[in-house]
Length: 339
Ligand code: PEP
Ligand code: MN
Image (cartoon, rainbow, N blue to C red; front, top):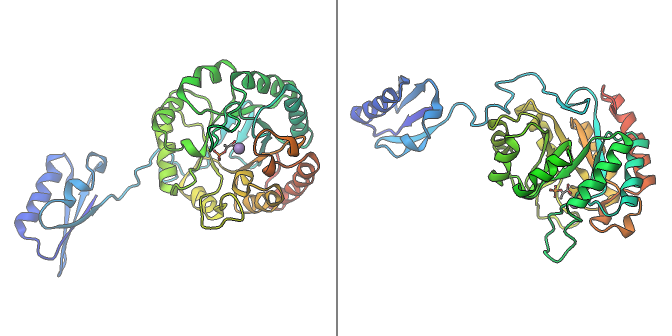
C-alpha cells in the first residue's frame, strides 16, 4: 500500500499513518519530499483497504501496490496454465474449437450437430439446455432433458461437452450428467453465489465476460472461482455493449492481448455472440486467433433458419467447414495448430 500525504500534512498526521501500519504488523517506509511525504506500508497489504488511510487527516490518497486478483494473475504464476478436459490440453500450443448449437432442441438436431463438430475438427460440443433469454416469453431451453441429449450425442462422438449453468440449484444435475465444462454466461459473470459454488467443485469452468464488465472485474470474478479451490478456469471474451447497432456486441480484441498478459489461464473467444450475425463470424474468428486466443466457441446449427434460438448467428454446415479450413491454415501460420 502506498499512502500519499497532502502538502499540508503535519508530523502528527504522518505519525498516525505510521502507527496504523505498525498496529497491523507491517512496517513503514517514509519518503519525505520537498512538497509531500509518501509512505509505503511494507508487508501483506491485503489486511488493509485503501479507504482505511484515505479518510485520515493529512492523507491525499492511498492505493494498493499489488493487484487484488492473485491466483489468476500471471504475476504469481508466470507460465501459461493448461486446463485439462478429458485429455484435451486447453491453453497449450493447440487451439481448440468448441462448437454446437446455441440451444439443445431435439436428439436429431444434436446428433447432426455433434457429427458435424467431430467431422470438421471441433474438439468440444456445446449446447445450452437452459437459455438466459432477454425476454421471459422467449424459448428458455428444453431443461434437464437437454443435458441428457447433449451427453448422449457428445459421448457418441467422443467429444467433451460444454453447457451453461444458470442457477446454483441446477449444479447437481450438471454433475449428474457429467457436463465436462461448465459455462458461466455473460449475464452471470458477477453472480457471486454461482461463482463460489463452481469454485467448490473441480470441473473446468468457462467464464464469459459480462457485456459491460471491465477486465479487472472479469479477473476478479475468476478469482472468486479460484479462491474456492477450482483453478480450472477458461476465460471467454464475447463482446461488450457499445454504441454501434449494426451488430450485437463489439468484439473487444484488445482484451485478448491484455488478458494474455494479466492471467496465465487460457483465453478463448466467442465470435458468434459478439457478431450476432453468421456472416460476420469468420472474420471475427480469424481476428481472434491472430490476436492470441487459445480457442474459439462457435454457434453452429444443421439448419439455422429453423433454429429455436440464435439462428441468425449460427454457421450452417458449409460455412462451418470453410471456416475450419481457414482456421487450420491460420493456426499453422501462427505457430500453433488446430488440435
Ligand atoms: C451462450 O453461450 O449461449 C450464451 C448465452 O452466451 P453469452 O453468455 O456470451 O451471451
Ligand atoms: Mn446464445
